[in-house]
Length: 143
Image (cartoon, rainbow, N blue to C red; front, side, top):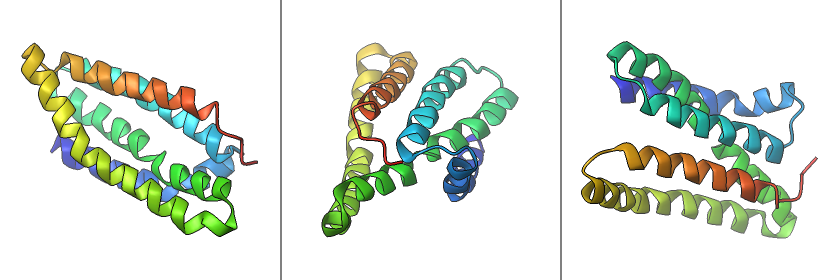
């Protein structure tokens, strides 16, 4: 039920992320910085939940925040690549997203095997969000 709520909130959020960025007058880069920062915070907040109600409630917010950046990554890559390389940029971005689905279970499994608990995983996820935010600052703003 927690994952279902997380996913439904994420799907809904990804559908409105472009409109939300427009209403906030944020460029793709700045929206990525905001949403990735929120994702790092929500990762930690979610990791400290111990009740079912807390996991559901925070899971809904966490799911929504986690799905916000995906369309902005691809759109930003396409804008920065230029008209000639738009399809290549979009395809490369999608390839990276798909590779993450193969890499993440290995990293998570090794972290659980090495430590015997899930605590390290939450810090890895949060650290990845921080690294992503830092890399966003090196990207040219698209507005």
